[in-house]
Length: 448
View 1 (tube, rainbow, N blue to C red):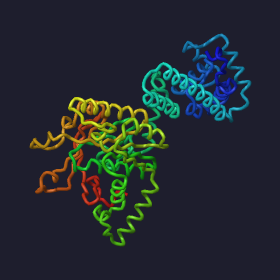
View 2 (tube, one colour):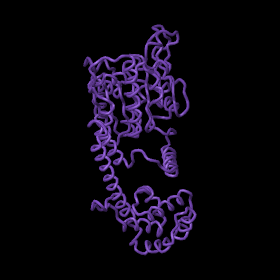
View 3 (tube, one colour):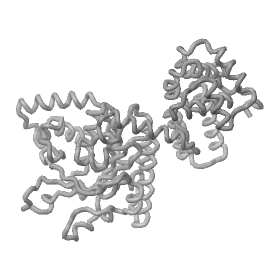
């Protein structure tokens, strides 16, 4: 097709050959190349076949040299009569294995240009075929471009061998980190032991009745991730303003009661603590949007432009239902709206490849029970949310309902659903003066 249109396909045969030749001349450079390149980034089929053979041999710890590679190509059924001569020629013309990183960069660059051209063709076809409204096409186009930027393709079958290697890489990274959990710590070790941290592509729902602390625990997680991981966190608040959220974050970081910040009645020591906390907070990359009419698509589009994104926090799900609409919802349309929103949030988590923590209100069903601890069925319009969420955490404080509670600041984070395994209850300390939670074994002054 490109030849018919007079277009030249971007690829560099010399660079592809130099990468293959370098790996055969000096197998010590194989791990470096495998980190940079995927088999599909080679344009010439024979180069791709040789690379895939070397990849498989390396994965199984086999010796890599011209003889063994040619033998394995026969085993894999990709050997051709010209292979032996081609391998000898590739090794002869490769200047040096020392520059393999530069050769790999050229191959990768040309592959990206090819994928970009293919994506542009797909977008053009979508437009001229009239495949939807302009906003929907813009969203699809952004998704395709973002996937390219992240080094992924949208959809498509992937061989299990490639997935196995990715899984091994993730296991190795978890082992090397020494954290004992695969995900990002929430700052609440007891909770982490249940849900194994905040994991990539997961939708984590924090569900509670109003005033129970769902915004607070979500902000706890956001602050801990931003400070400990030194990565970007996006917070979308449809209920509270940016200033209200930052007040809470400052109170938590400085360990100064929120009421003192709101009234301005602060001691010199508290002013010092707040100044230090403000400097720490300003050094983080926490980004807040308090637009109450945001849709999930708007959030997704913004997050695609955030570099080094580690976590997305949304407060809260039910306010998303009427975002951008000017009418009230019937029960049926409301349920459908929540179903669509929860599905879109799960898709966003997968596409961005980061955890999405979303606060959600519970219905009043628990108020009528003697045991008011939340259940999955208490989620408003719960069917779709239950299905899409990977983790559901219900919050309960006996002190909220019972003024004579022995420990009014004892909170329970009840893991109602967990795709990775354990459910059950985790006890936490509720610190009302800081609108914050801590683990039971920690005092609030040990947190940071």
